[in-house]
Image (tube, rainbow, N blue to C red; front, side, top):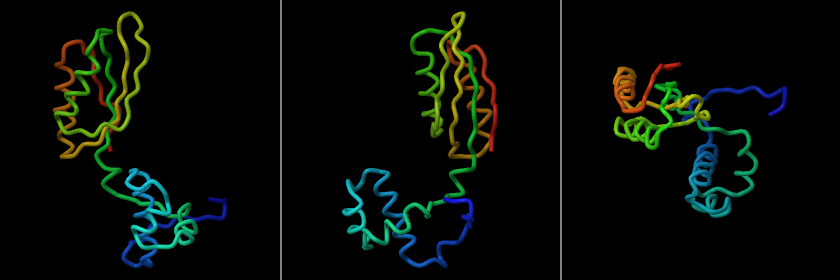
Length: 147
């Protein structure tokens, strides 16, 4: 994009079919469902030139992907399996983990931040916080942000 570019959010229903097909090709390539743009374009039914013309200017937007994202900060004892137990609990609670960052342990405690997307209601935040807090080896838990 250059400085004269302007981003516009448009309902895909009013766009030419080729735009939706370019998005589909990009998803096929990102998910490794097709190994090349040639194969993906052929599968979707557009020319490679159409794909290359639009690929750097078209991006899929899913409102649901930006909702229900929270960031948790926790301090964990430097013991085997503590981080693993946190991740297993989050999985069991159906949270989609987006990022995990951990510091080097200092004085026997490591700080972690985990960003995740909730699949249910925002009330899950409290269930997650209390669940993580109750795990063996978890020293402290805070919710840093929620959208």
